[in-house]
Amino acid sequence: MTSVILNGEPRELPDGATVETAVGELGAPGDGVAVAVDGEVVPRGEWASTEVRDGQQVEVLRAVQGGR
Amino acid sequence: MLELAGRSFESRLILGTGGFRNLEVMAEAARESGAELATVAMRRGDPSAHGSIVDVLREAGLEVLPNTAGCFTAREAVTTAKLAREALGTDWVKLEVIGDDRTLLPDPAELLEAAETLLAEGFTVLPYTSDDPVLARRLEDAGCAAVMPLGSPIGSGMGINNPYNLRLIVEAAGVPVILDAGIGTASDAALAMEYGCDGILLASAISRAADPPAMARAMRKAIEAGVEARRAGRIPRRHYARASSPEAGLADLEQGEREDNAPDGDGARAASRAQLVERRSR
Image 1 (cartoon, rainbow over the protein chains, first blue to last red):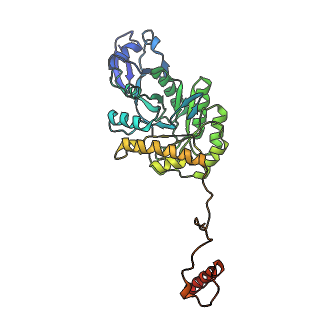
Image 2: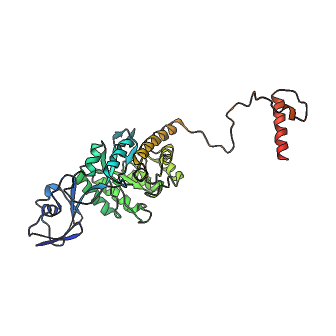
Image 3: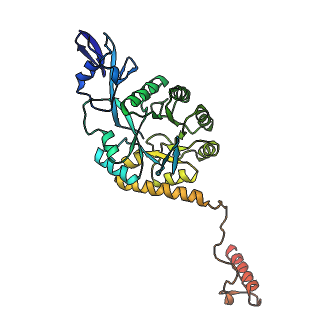
């Protein structure tokens, strides 16, 4: 198992899990979603090929109401 | 017409989307405001969520401008801008780096650093800045597409606290000056335009008004009025009154009260008024 922090919550992912696996834990990704792993952006085209490792911090973000 | 980073916008209002009680009210206010750009923030969320704010804004005819709200360091802001670029497909960013929790004032050092980094990465940077003319110049020199000084703290509704600084920024700027934060009501918006701002970013004044769509309309009109007034050229302020009706040809209606028998005419009337003023001051 791979233990990551996904949007602030600890999660156990199967061995060999990728960014795509992690995002899928939260729901099937639509448009307008972006991911950072340990503070570095992972472009959408690289989600499937980017493995996550133990202890990594995965942030899955989308646009919300905000500003002034 | 607002010229921003090589693009033209009919509206000089950029709408923040914070504080609206729901997306329906936001969409209606957005339409009433005439704005063509609206800010959004990047937050953790369900990646499968439908009917998102981006869809609602685009349906209402607005383009999305991501911000870096909530970031306290240059590093956080830069990463957030990159995430927004990835999520929304825009390299425009409303850059905010906050330095103080209570006042939400910008952190000038982190802001400038973030701006320089993002500009080097090809972003179009629209920075929220304090009303410091020197910092505004530094941001412009770095290559920012606009400077966005606050009128007063975010959400405070205090209006423009330092008109002098704002005017110094406007005088010196070679890029658009967009007043960002502090607007409380329509007259504040008109005043900002009269001071020579090129645009305004606001949300709370509309989104937290009792009737947001009506306030959105008021803001649109106020901004138009302020721009017109600026163009028209206001009269100078005077310490004393300046009569707007002619002095010449005033009737003498105090004839019976006069102490001497001065002849009729303007001279007599002036004498009679002098006597009147003297009597009252005794």
